[in-house]
Image (cartoon, rainbow, N blue to C red; front, top):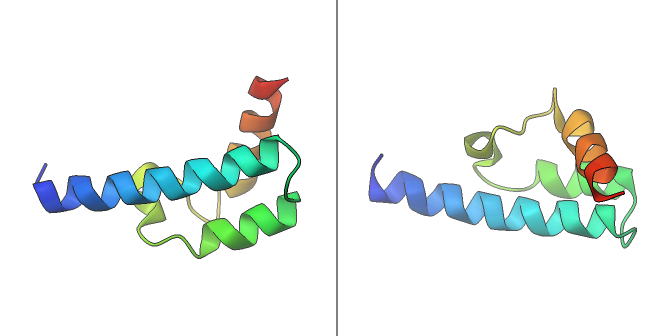
Length: 65
């Protein structure tokens, strides 16, 4: 992978992890998490898209329990 792709991958991963952590700790609602994740640039690089975002959030919540 190129350094540029890795850079954007890391940015998307950090931002999405922050949002998912806020959802898991009940700082934000699921709807807010979905809205915020939809605004993360290059989110597809970390394997999250509009079709699986609900599943990603549900899995993160169940793993935290």
